[in-house]
Image (tube, rainbow, N blue to C red; front, top):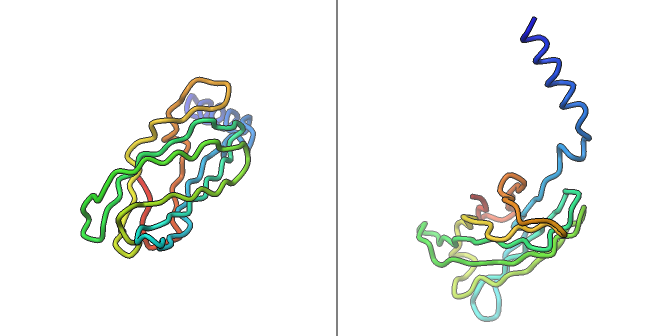
Length: 139
């Protein structure tokens, strides 16, 4: 009986949370890679803020791995601001490496994640990673 009561209470709590709050996520998508005139690689990212708050600070620290699996460099990208319930396109240059030499982008830190009019927070739990390219994006 006690297990039944706990299960019923957990179900009631889950149903009481609005659906949009349960799905409130930030999706970071590596959408496209393109060679630049300098021989570097341009990375097109889509940031979809599905939360109920604008982020005035959102910065990623990324390890860039080449096709040999070796870290080529660390890259810091500032994606802010991320408006509430919007998708934002951001373009970043990955210097001194061609797109065909990339294998993976590893997000090893989110040094800045600050909702508007609020204290900085840890965003790792809010973020989903996706790549539409052959280059993997993740943590």
